[in-house]
Image 1 (cartoon, rainbow over the protein chains, first blue to last red):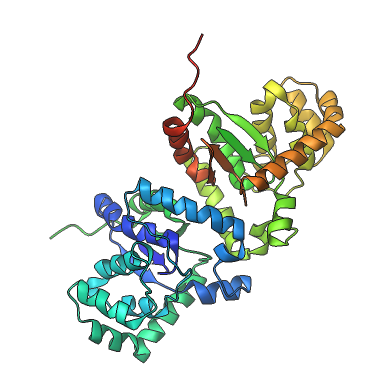
Image 2: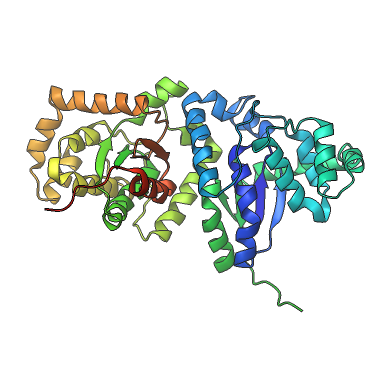
Length: 201
Length: 201
């Protein structure tokens, strides 16, 4: 199952901290797909801000809802001083994290939404990579490469092609599920209609 | 618990056909609150159409999602030929249905989203009221009264005051839950934080 997310997205934070355990319990293989909501919203809605800021009432609800969801799922939560934060650099770093993707994604989301750190800053990302046992300086260098920039652009283009219009999303057996509260539906879809997993050898 | 809905809203349909059983199982008293999304969207977003039509990609997803949800909850589903249908008259009829509110709400939603009937037409609503054992002609007369029109306007004003920005919503122990997929959360909130029910006598 593919997990599509943007590091600036509040509901993606909740999903990111739930999805790995949920997939592990169900025996579903998870694949992280960072992308950028910014170009997508600009193309689809003609806006250059979060819809939660543009639609004020929806935003007010979202902030309270996040408190409740984090309480429900026992996740740490601190409302970030800046929203949405630029997630371009974070997404690039996540694009080239290889086997460390899971821990890194969780660390970046926690920094933004539990510790109110500015994940747009290179030094913050460097420390986060170092903190999970990686090489932060090397990760930042790689993230700046033409290949990684192109990878993130390709992810965003693929998100648009898949019909994505917000985040987070789960792609399960070819079907899109939007919203963190559809995680269980997506896993059920994947387990009942996805291709059978290869037997363990 | 209060159930806020618009008869034009697809996700309200799913909620309307689930909410009564769910509340009954949990021992939660349910109160129906029909309102109009139209004036709300115009005021909050400056649009005079459904956001699912304005944001094309979100609409495409919604239509597929409704098929899946209706399959999951074993609800009949037929995509209506017109979307959104004018729900003003249907909401007025529901505002004055008294003890028949539950069956009438379900009948109107089924007509729109399972039978592709034009619920904007008085003769359709008359037949629906007759069909649940009421007096359709009398219901239409009452729905046209100044009092009932004022009641629906008051409902919509109250929805806006509560912070509602879409439908369906559940108001549980003073807290708003948006979206049919938060029905269980709303009921849990009501049962753990709502006022205790009076003992049965």
